[in-house]
Structure formats: structure tokens, C-alpha cells
Image (tube, rainbow, N blue to C red; front, side, top):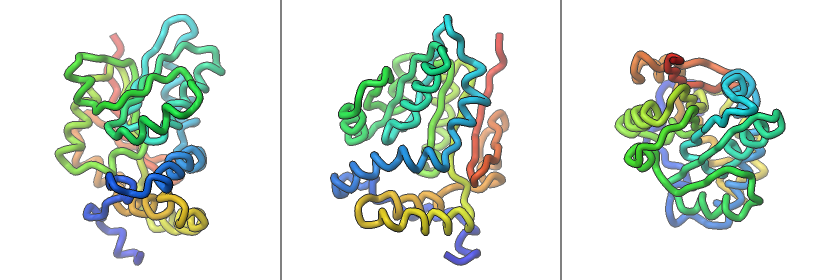
Amino acid sequence: MTRAGFARRDTGAREFMDFPDCDPDRLERTYQQFRTINRLVSGWPRIYRRWIRPRLDAQRPTTLLDIGFGGGDVARAIAGWAARDGLTLRTTAIDPDERALRHVRALPDCGVRFEQAASADLVARGERFDLVISNHLLHHLDKAELESLLADSTALSRHLVIHSDLSRGRTGYGLYAVATLPFARRSFIHQDGLLSIRRSYRRPELQTIVPPEWRVRSMFPQRLLLTHEKAQT
């Protein structure tokens, strides 16, 4: 893409794995490769150390909800880090796509409760969690869906919400295109990743459309953190 091609979000593009009739083998390989991609670029180890671990305790259970778990690797990783640190964390992860649930149920048990559900379903049930997170979810949503997600997140969270996503940029797009080209024929990780970058926000764009109590932070490499923190009582 040209520099001008990154001036606006490509909201008309739809990721291949979002189609219900996409190739199931390529989809499964995509879920499997999420772990590697997220390990390299998502920055969740830093988010865990900075935002999540300080709120955990060895004796008092803390609850965490991951919205739109995809391949399930982020929820599984956070649960594993907490266990390694001797901290008590009860993790729930939801995704409305039954294909994602089939994928995680075939993996070894890690203590995370996975469920096919949307955030609105949990709000309707009156569920609450200490911490609410998501990874690579914001760029999938239109304006109304984003507003609903933020409303659901604040309703579900007692303390802190962290939505982590990509930040649209030419450099990241180019690096990702080269790094993932070998996987282009076997999964959707190459094509969909490039679409995700084109659909993602830049920091000023996101800050202007979210309510004022939400804060947008930049994080290396080319990532955005959208956070909402409630006062401790």
C-alpha cells in the first residue's frame, strides 16, 4: 500500500476467517499460529507485569474475563503466568464463534473456562469480573458494535478494562507482510493480519470516538491500549 493508503481505516475489508464457509483446515492452522504471532507482537507479557499482576493476590482470588478469545492463547498465557507467580486468578474467556470453542476444547486443560458467548450475554446474566481484557478485537467492530463493547466492558468490570489492538502504520504493515509471507498458502495469518492492520485505528482516531473516561495509550510495536479504570473503594 502507498503512504496515502494508510490515511484512513479500510473498514470495507473483511477478514477471511470471519466468513462462516472459510476453509476449516486453514482456519485451524490460523488459530494455532495466533500463539506465535501474539507472542511476538502483542506485548501481553508487559501488560501482565504492568497492569494485571499488581492486582493479583496469592490468597484472594481475582477474576478475569477475556472477550473474543480467538485461539485462546492470550487467556491461557495469562493464567499460566499467574500460576507461575503463585497468584490466584480465575480466568473466563468468551467468543461467539463456535469454531473457536471447538479449537480450544481440543487443547490440554489449562484451568481457563472457555464459553461460546458474547459480552452482552454475560451482562444479561449479571456476571462481574475484576478485570476485563480483549486482544485484536476493536478493529473488527463498527461504531455501534464498539459502543456496545465498551458499555458491556464497563458493566462487566469491577476495576479495570484493557482492550489491546493494532495501530495502523506503514512500517508495521511492511514488516508483517514479509514475516508472514511463508504462511500465506496454509493459513489466513498473512492475509488477515494485513487486513487487520488496514482496519485498525491510530491513536488520535480512537481517542476521538471513545467516551472521555477511556484512555488510549501507544505501546511498542505499533499497538494501542484502550483502558478504563474504576476508582478503588
